[in-house]
Image (cartoon, rainbow, N blue to C red):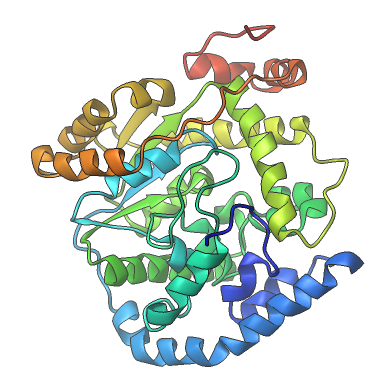
Length: 372
């Protein structure tokens, strides 16, 4: 029987190395009522250290020498913009490689210990995400940021663990390219290893990544993969910010080591939206049309196959007809689980108009004072 609630006895850092585990916690305080979860997570991570060592000595040479055969494709978009659906569909291509949920949770031992750990993890994760009813499975595509948090400490996803430090984490680590050179080098090394492991694991030759955090890393990714392609999917700013505000609240309960502060508000989310979107608008100017496709979420869900066909034609990914049966099969087995229509609160509408009216206009949406 699979769980139905997003609530775990340990945090998602159970799959981290002990060194990385303590590096992540170095500048954040664990509140007293979460100390049992903290120590239990550390204990699990300690137990897995021997397996981490086995994988490291078995695979480190092949991972270090791995070279991508084709340019990677990075799906980017603000959280709750349809990136998961687009990612799932593009990963139905037999040539696709991708980070799985299992790799994201156990990136340090997934190539050698999956034979017994997969079934255990599948028991603990819910059958569907509680906030939008999208199906979950250890072998489904997953955004790599959760995995990156388990191999190196520079990620804004620490705010899920330490919500009281949300503002500081965003301020210090949203823009990975602004970190000191030695930290950037560490991040690049681990990101490349993440992709290499994904290719070894799935057997695909074209990496398809999905990570909203990469909205703030386009330049960094281009420095690593000069021929990389990007797909930006976007959603109505009023809806997407309201949806993310509620989404993050639903996640905190399952993994947090601090109470959710009163300072986490809709304004917090809208300011994050403004900051990351303005950065995206600047960075996309450096991308030629052959390397960037922009899609509206509402249009994509109405004609998924049509948009995917255009992606294949624009990026020269080969014959789309060979992939179409796999996509159609996935859609039949995993019907698009629409969450409830997002009704932005008046506060969200006012905040978007205050901070992100330029973004609304730039993306081609109508500015409004109320939601009907």
